[in-house]
Image (cartoon, rainbow over all chains, first blue to last red; front, side):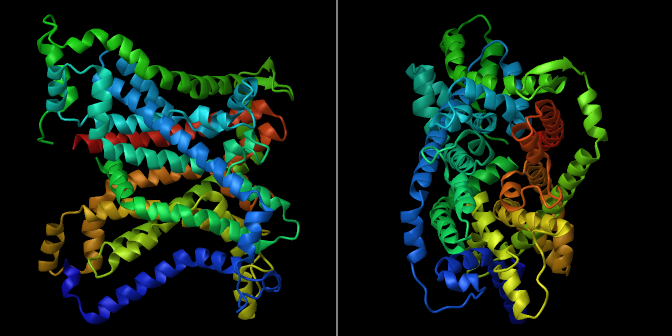
Length: 275
Length: 314
């Protein structure tokens, strides 16, 4: 509030600072996207200025590399992971909030313990498990281990606990069973938390790096994160413009999604952090 | 928290008051429903979290052959060996330096951004959106953008240095510079998320506190250090633990930017586990390192839980 009666020079100074910081943060995007439009010659010479800009690098990225396939793989895997986590996390959260059964607290404690164990420390036996199950180099290897998450369960449990008691009482009077109450009342009532978990699990799956690198070897199942690495290692002459173009192709849709979903995401994050 | 009683409290009350009168008719089915609702999650967590964790600990107590089969029981000798190996200690030190650097700069810069963006000025929404933009960047994209900037011959920094007739810095071939390169890239990636959370916290500080301080003639700096910082300290603590935990688990950027080099200068814990297990086939050592990583992460997660407990209670 105090800013409103600030002097003009001070406000200008604030704007200068705001703009300067925005430029620094955005610089890697600008540089990357700008280079992706430059002719190869320029980059090789270390010359960043040219009037000869073109989409050639984008055409090359789409036609000469399997980047579309990588994107499709990532999209399918992230979507399936998200749907599965929404379903299984909400189911287990429901059980922890609305069902009474023996050992409930112990089980919930186990879920909490799970959150303390980093997946990175479990890769050796997990690799052996998926190899034994014949899941290597297949979509399933990137989805099945992440069908549920303790964090998601914990987050939804916190949210489900805030469901008003009147809703439960009304459902009991109506004679709804657990399935109906879960599906028709609890899930719609906790829509915001579900959207937050959806965004979180989608981005989590999308950004996986170590596990897909260990378990997928062909373009049929390789996801975009490892695909970019693959392109980079294959480019013997370091064709930066095409790699930059690929990076731009990947980052632009995510940023658009993020801008659209930001409102939800922000309220969800703060709910999770401050509640 | 003076809202109407929530469902769980209501159920508990009901069950406490009417143990015998089975007015709560859903209870009879609870056992089957709970099995149905929890079954899938328990199966997945059991197979992909609990089993591998126990197995990893088990392997860490043995010597293994190159196929990963356990041979001789070794007790804690793997741990003793690792914790006295200069190579592993180097990895620990390097990881700690990275975690400290990433956490400090992520928090300091995000705090600056959040404080600026919390000012009520026309058009501030645009800056809020721009500052959170790195949330949409994945490891591989961040690595590609920054690798080009750091590139010693054709990179952006090199071009600037050449234009200014300075000697370009060897970002990726000099050990301490390589560490900075990785830290800078990680901090840049972290900014969007941390900024958003801190902005939310700063916005929820009651305006009356600032108004009162302004009346008293307190400077903006004073207000920031004596009102904003103390009021958001729980959130600051929360994001620090998240940042620390994530930094300890870093792998993608290391693999893409430095591959642990030069001369092990960025050979951090998870990268080491990966190399030891999947390159050298030294499963016992990799498992021991994995358990050490787990202990570190678990300690910081516990700290975070403590915070959540406190926040929930007040």
